[in-house]
Length: 107
Figure 1 (cartoon, helix red, strand yellow):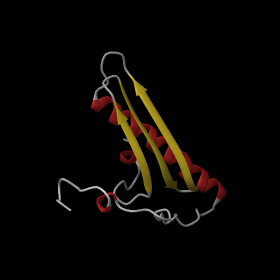
Figure 2 (cartoon, one colour):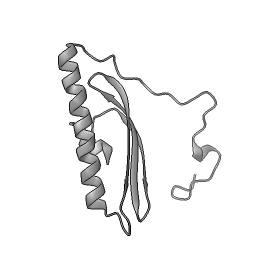
Figure 3 (cartoon, one colour):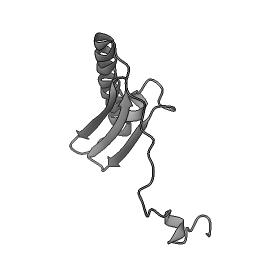
């Protein structure tokens, strides 16, 4: 997936959603990169069956190429990105367990 192509995937600022069906795999992400935020969306299709090995490797490679473009752009501009956003729940947000019993915890 997209996050796997980032240089530090476990500490990167990324919000993503992936999707899978038997012939297609996709991932869309908002990433805080070397020059600031960017969106990357990848959709892969293979008639008959899309295997995980192919799609994950391809998404990882595309993600790394895009990241490297922004690293290059940052070096050319000699600039630093603005600080990453801190996401907050919207007003009125209630965790799902507050209005629906969560089966796994019994709360």
